[in-house]
View 1 (cartoon, rainbow, N blue to C red):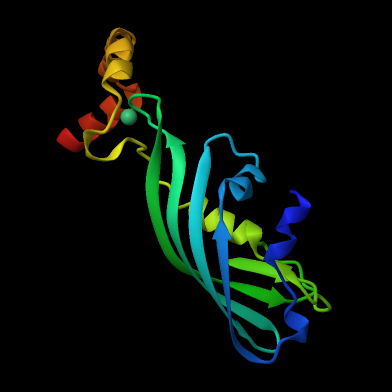
View 2: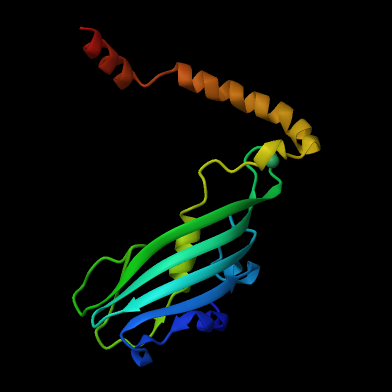
Length: 177
Ligand SMILES: [Zn+2]
């Protein structure tokens, strides 16, 4: 990550107990810093509410914007609208605990927290499994170019699904008996 991520550092030690608000704008350079080839571009507005207590920072996130992704159908880039409302917890503890997108552990003497990775992960996890142009917006020329290739591929896929896993057949027989 670049030094640019400094703007996402929250120096919580100097803040009072209670709720604090932050706003960020995430543009393409933010997403490029994470070196994920799936995300080509992006533009998000982020509102963060942080409630500080003695040992916890409770974050509420509202993220809305779009990501540039490659369409699974026509292979051209398109804009995927995404909005996320979520929360996560930062715990100040010297015990070892597993971090994930819901819980981040910092040492008890920590005084700052860089929120950039959490913002990134919450957006990344909201990407739908199926990535295609909304409202039939696929590029018709690309679809035509791909059609022959896709037909071959679909043939192979249907062959695969006919050869069902023998374990499934065994299960089916069990149910029938
Ligand atoms: Zn498309």
